[in-house]
Length: 131
Image (cartoon, rainbow, N blue to C red):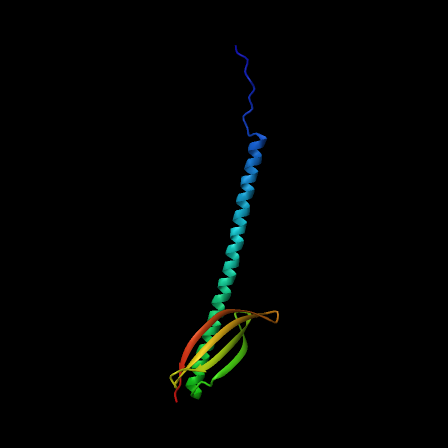
């Protein structure tokens, strides 16, 4: 009968350390990617909401024009709440080469802790005058 050798079958310390390093690097890469996705999602949500605020403002101007005649030229700034946030909308209305058409430039900022951030959306519209 041959003497049996007691050979241990398992991982060496070096293999275990290598596995821990690979798992650590993978975890770090995944958490960084998830953080980036969360940041992009927040930015996209803010820009989408700012776009809606700007569109609503332009539609308000169109409705005011319908009820009151020509849109007056000039600059204006107003604050409003939408989506549980405060927004500042800056509007500049200028003449165009056509006397019955006005150019409307709209910039939308988010107001956070009293400070204005942005603009998160800018839009240009043209409004016709009924005069």
